[in-house]
Image (cartoon, rainbow, N blue to C red; front, top):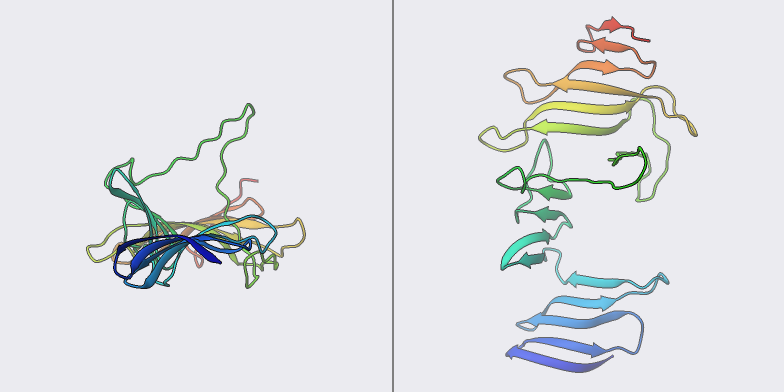
Length: 220
């Protein structure tokens, strides 16, 4: 490629704009002290036009600012952080998407659906036994398909769990056949991990108590 424009801000720091003769590669590069900091380019190798915005370091950070303040960042581990520049471990791990704030507005999110029918918004949690993205390897009995975990700061961190609602496979799954159960767990005083208190099985029966002391409530 050839360089169409180079803007130097100081020695060895500059912005370069390239006039490309191929479909892929950097169109704009930003360098600081001679090292590539980030780039804007294109990638059409898949046959679909793609705009790439990238940093040149595994620890590089991409930030978006509004009114001079950070609104969102993608850190070096590809985590999306809104409201805070630090990924926080909550109930056992720092997740790939985080919202942190100091009010109900700045620490919450809304999902709104506007359609002229009786359907609402959806949050979908799913699991496969595949080892790569896009996998559809069938799950097995007792596999946990998704969880809602509730935690709180204990004066040290946010890793203590207070309660969990989980969904698991409750039988043998197959094509268009996914038997499931819901399990409700709470954490006793003096502990930081949740214990099962109730479940709704695939047959609709409700069981109260822990796994060793169930009280059966048949509502079918």
